[in-house]
Picture 1 (cartoon, rainbow, N blue to C red):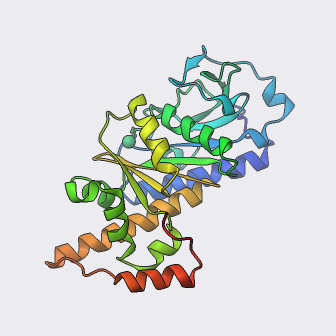
Picture 2: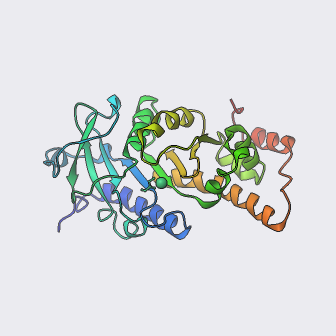
Length: 271
Ligand code: 2HA
Ligand code: ZN
């Protein structure tokens, strides 16, 4: 069957990078079964032919109204689809959607009527925020990184500032590449619109948002950078866990050493 990607090399390149990240998520053990989802704003690649494509499903409600998304197009991983299948072929694991003029509904235009991710309201609310804030960010990525989720089972680490400081102090690169740290959102039912507002509040201040006892969601200029942010923070969590497994609580870098990284890398002060 012809795919929307046929003869659209730039769009294909972007979706190939989503497939590459999907493969990494599976290899890392962060994407069991249908776990995780991703959304890419692909509006810049949309041509007249795509704009004229008819819907292949009934309009569906987003669950929130998102004014900046009017007329935008997104690639969304499909609900129930596996990252490891998406890694082989992004159009088998997801679909292209168009946001309708009411900014509260969308329709699928290609390739198959694969219903987008159950977390679509959080993903699209973040996409709306990225457009509103003028950030040239196109990707949102949700996954289940093992060590970060494990840390969210301890009350001590539900404090965003404390968790951020602990992770920064595990390995110097964490601060360099996640200078805003990680914000924690208290547990809410996966896929519920209850997650939307607290997630938006946290992404304004932090690089990555941790959904208590569930997973993380990150944003980035592209899907690879969103992945990198999660990977860097989870590496720090893994070092914390490894030290604990050796039988000791890691000392962590001193606050002075952390501050020196901030100065040398010319990072803004943390709030
Ligand atoms: O896509 O991870 O949070 C499945 C999920 C929902
Ligand atoms: Zn999830």
